Amino acid sequence: MSASELHEFLEVKSKYADWFKNMSAYGFEENIDYRAFSKNLENGGRRIDYEITLDMAKEIAMIQRNEKGKQARQYFIKIEKQWNRPKQIIARGLIESQKLIENLNQQVIEMKPKAEYFDNLVDRTLLTNFRGTAKELHIAPNKFINCLLEDGYNLL
Image 1 (tube, rainbow, N blue to C red):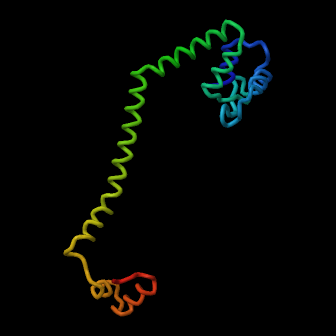
Image 2 (image 1 turned 120 degrees about the vertical axis):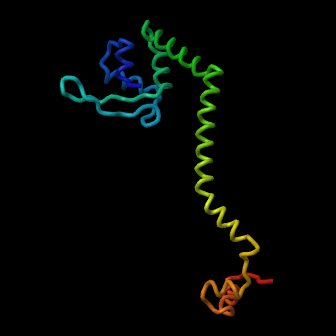
């Protein structure tokens, strides 16, 4: 949410820049709780605004001692109650499960050619001996066996 919109909603009397500086002094961290961005104004100018997290907005609303602060607190409590309703939790779980299933299906699609290749590779009718493998690699059987022994393969 926009910090300037929250400032406007809360009807804070101090200037926006001063107010945000004071609010961010409560221990909020840039790029974690808020991030700066440039906002175009109706008169053609530009102003630095801040995108703040919902948690930061809730905390700021909690420390405002006016009717608008109370309204904001009640709004955030209402939203949090809705978010934590069992139906909403289940709905979010279903969405995440669907994403997981889609990801797994994509992995299956990607792995299918490899699985088919492996199945063909281990098919007994396709297995070869050292001589046949050396022939496939276009090298002499003795040279192939010597290379395997040099690389530490125990042929027994």
